[in-house]
Amino acid sequence: MDALSCKEEEPKAASGLLSDNSGRNLHKADRIRRSGDFRKVMAEGRKLRAPHFVVRWCLNGLGATRLGLTVSKKVGNSCARNRVKRRLREYFRHNKCRLPSGIDVVIIATNGSSDLKTCDIFEELNGALGQRF
Image (cartoon, rainbow, N blue to C red; front, side, top):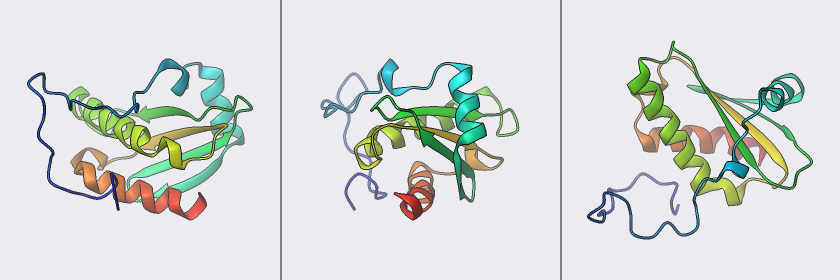
């Protein structure tokens, strides 16, 4: 598979970032930011499970696919939690075009998710989301 497979790390530019983002930036409009929106997804959304993640999703009526992340202290210290969030955002950036438009997706990281490599996270989420989308 293309960006979803586990491959060797590509060379980075001098700034530490890849030179070409290919338009996959995560903007404010791509994020769920209001607690009411999170509550709606948690109350009305459908649930998908992966070994280290729970994915909840529902229609938002906006025509845009948005991401919300929940990573509790059970996952690890702040460094581990932030690493998991960065990897989940990266997954969403690579796969936003594969998800149907007009849905809110909330990914909840569970205990043990901080020990996973990036390619393992991608494989788990592909398995869970591949069941539905």
